[in-house]
Image (cartoon, rainbow, N blue to C red; front, side, top):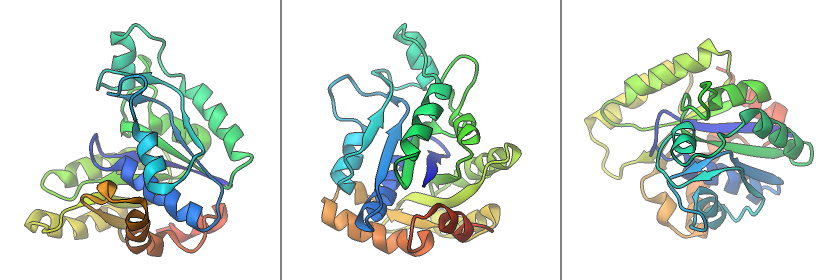
Length: 238
């Protein structure tokens, strides 16, 4: 079994679509996979959220959401606004560890970027990854301004001793501009490895069959043939 944390350089970079792509690849290979969203923000109770999107795209039904706040804010700010208890990532870590005892892969999708706060003490998804000793799949953009946010996030990962499982572009435009094209080489130098993939823009709006074909084309070569914990980690060493 293994746990993989999916986080981003910020909000709206395509984390949910990348999470769904990895989940679809695992499911298609017969891997029992669970997907966790510790906190969903910006969605009203009863409305479809990120995990519903993951289900629709990947076919994975083993989904776990532990908190939801209607305000489109960080989990910490949303909890304050709604006068709710904050998300306890120590509890989330325990639940994820329990899930991982009975599944070969547990994907944990963070809210916003790596250092977004879940409580007023400043607990972040980076702390969750550290507690779980889980590698991090980082999702970034490709256009103007992406290099700085990517560099800062990679630096934060390294400073916390967190393992980078791979760097993925979450929404690659159909006609990439000069910034997108030139940033790829710099991003690979920052990550000290080739990109793990680039998901085409709009992939999350396709049907499940087309989406799985896209996942196989853009992520499968980098993620390797299995999702065994040892194989996964070894294949992503720089």
